[in-house]
Image (cartoon, rainbow, N blue to C red; front, side):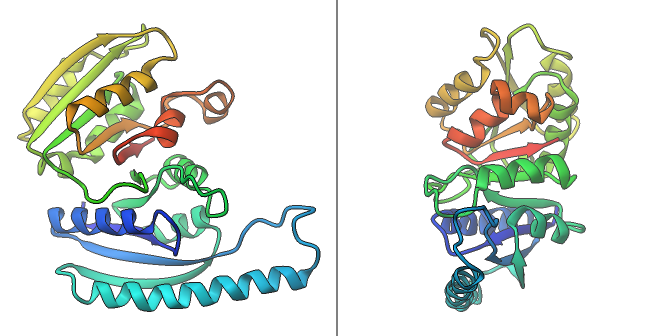
Length: 267
């Protein structure tokens, strides 16, 4: 995992994305590609009175991003990482997906509180399912990526295994790894098999088990993250069909809404 792709855009989540992207790139001795987005919002009937309004919005967005580009590139020049800058215009998920062909990890946010900005939960969800790459979804309040401790949410699924395998380079840099198996009757493979896999990669792992009722796993994970001093969470993304999670809720949806730490997701 050497090629890190991070979204740059002047919004409330950018500083968190930037700091975490730098931390990941340094830890893995990788290369950071900053994708600076001039965002085109979706044309929704009733919002835009005329094409002139859309042109005005794009002009304002372009002006903001021009200033943002100059500011962020100036900061990057003083950082000790290898980096390059790419300018794009369009939708966040689509442009990131197109730029991720040779990326090993995509860094975006989980849901942002500001409704006027990019829908980061949708962006992260689409990237997890459609990009074929792991996604690190960062809370806007995050100041750095701590590698002191990591939690792996384990349910034995193909998605959980994919996320764990993809996260191995980062887990190898993490001091303490806990594999949490929340038993709600859906465990497909025992946590000991996952721990054995990690041990062969030089990652000692503590296995913890807890029972919960069906549908409670997301909230239980958030509780555990809050009291365990974890720097990030590794989990499979949308282990059930995404439209089912959208209708009935799901662990992925809960974590993209509420996680207090960065969430490393793979599908």
